[in-house]
Image 1: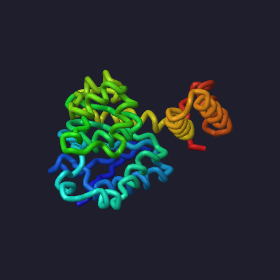
Image 2: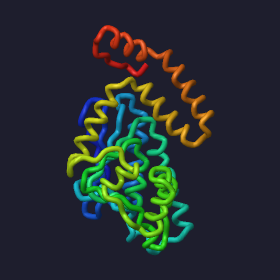
Image 3: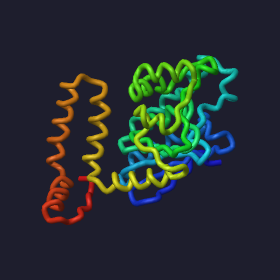
Image 4: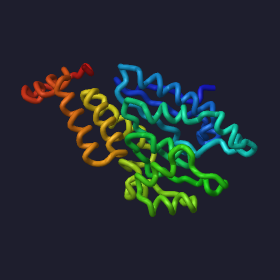
Length: 256
């Protein structure tokens, strides 16, 4: 059974759908490995300019596969080398949009937070309930959540296992946009199509500089921004875009 289904709903747009509906798309090792392979492939595919990841109407991903974790210890967890799977998503050069309906819990919430943009249907529920199982997030849940919603909201969620609705997540800064139930994928495709129509080198530099700048002081971040902005003046797409603006033509970008 294919655990990650790839589709191409628009030109330059790829959609990855988690496909374990019987267990609310729980992230077992096989699914995470398939996801890694898909992100590695799409990151290198020059025809793809935006990637959407989604689940189904009931769940984006309701955490890890708990049945497979009861009897394992630290050594086996380390041997799984799960960081390779997450790194493929974290290091993806293309914009990643998470389209979420239903549950995004534990590893599912961490997976969503690996995305650059999160679109949530009104039914979406976000949370990191690992503490209830005697463990804690291990794929960025503590670090990405605090950066998104702040220390005090993150501490409350992480230490109690409390969840957030889509509306609460939007108000807290965790998600980019809330739409009607079962409309998250359609809205994500709309956003991805808009991004895919932009100059791809400019989009790639924006993503890289924004993420790198979050981890350094402001002066260094501004230096990174200036250098990247100057480099884009050497691209063919810059000339195409500016000439299109002047001549009131809709430009088509080559990514060069």
